[in-house]
Amino acid sequence: MNNKQISRREFGSQVLGTAAAAAIAGRLSAQDNTSETFRPRYILGSPMYGYTKLEGILPEVAKVDAQAIDIWPKVHGDQREQIDQMGHDRFRALLEQHQVSFGCLTHYKLGPFGLQDEMRFAAQFGCRTMVTGGKGPKELTGGELKAAVADFVEKMKPHLAVAEETGITIGIENHANNLIESPDSLKWLAELTPSPHLGIAFAPYHLPQDADMLAELIRQLGKSIVMFYAWQHGMGCTTKLPKEQELLQMPGRGELDFTPLLAALRDIKYTGWTEIFMHPVPRGIPILEPTAAVTDEINRSRSYLTNCLARI
Image 1: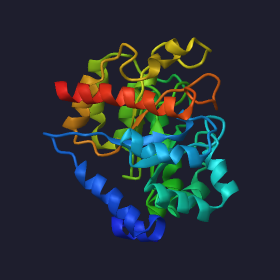
Image 2: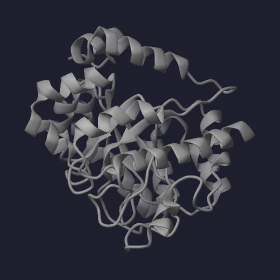
Image 3: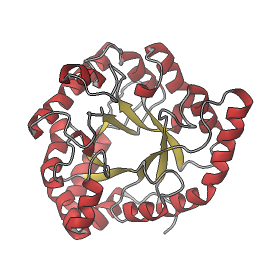
Image 4: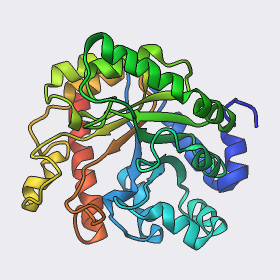
């Protein structure tokens, strides 16, 4: 396979079928962003629904104004495992039936150096984005941090060769307790990356909840951002809390003002994925019950983000 992105028409014929691809292409063209206009390109994260079957999740994608699904494995979700259980042909048929693209495969447990087989798997379905965490020493600063990020980037080169081969872009999330965690580590990653196939999955949850600082960081990272999580810290996601407190991670519920962040995304002409997100406690359960309640909650946050955009 060459290193060029396949066209929408090729993607449709290979994965979704002509009718489904045409519908997706129409939504894509309607969301082309300029510095004057910005509309998030939404993707739906499968673990928002816990271990719900894909047959129940895929119909929800269009309901949240998304065009794609982000597939996660256990423990957060089990939809990656479901694909193997149902068979790849059945999964393709479900994507085509619901006119959904396989937009992202998230795989933390494999880490950045264990993705090669999964990249080849994802490419079969036209998936062009994978997300994972970084790997390396923690809590470094200054020159030591820069050197560690440079070492990480060097170790990624064999994996980026496969990413180029398959047309995948690997997004490294700024995850807690990780080499790529701080604003400085993100800046070094953006500066030192040797390939457009290595980018950043930007998670406000794991950064100081200062809207102006986050917005400035987005502008500094620019085209390196390939995934934006509409996700704030709220009261956290590591301890079981009453549901109303747990939901403070969602945009519009917690205290973080997303208006400056969206303005910054507009300024950098961001065209990557935007995923409205939170983690439940324990992992693997839906954020709410039943399925319709999850979709309603995502739409609640989406309405808030739309109002933020109107204020820019």
